[in-house]
Length: 207
Image (cartoon, rainbow, N blue to C red; front, side):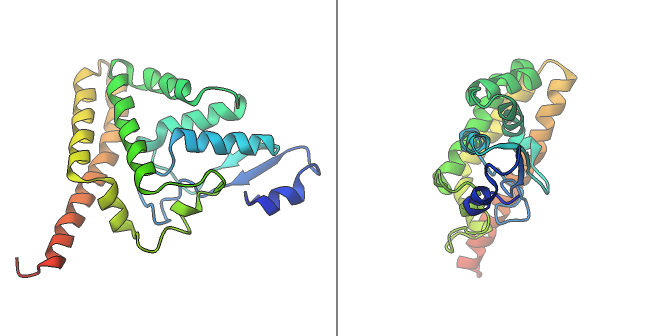
């Protein structure tokens, strides 16, 4: 069912449990192939839905596991134990998936989360995260979003962290998971740099 409050109130107490769907991670919305939610934003919403009687949540249509794998894992665990600590779950995921490269990858994801909340904050009561999907501020289109989230210095830091993780990883499985994040980062990096060059050309076509 829809996660809007009026839908929830209409069904609350009338059924044994509810399931819902959300567009939090919808790459077809303005956020595109990008980071969509931070761990604590998702955790707050999962706990809210749990209090309302939700037992499952569909996060279709697709996702960006290389950028949001830790958040997906955390969400799944929180549905089983809403009282679990999101930070501990992220640590558990990174230790299990990245091994010795865990610290570098945690820093990689933390920087992504920091940039998202700095550029596109969402209010606690915005359960649907509409501010990042259907109600993005009019002065922020997808290109502007990427340019603000990923200035050159941030891209350099992210690239450095990925390379550090690659150099530390000690199993092929660990390296494979890092490559997945590398693929998504390469997309963000190349797309953002291309848009920056295009904006520069728009401002001075004679160059």
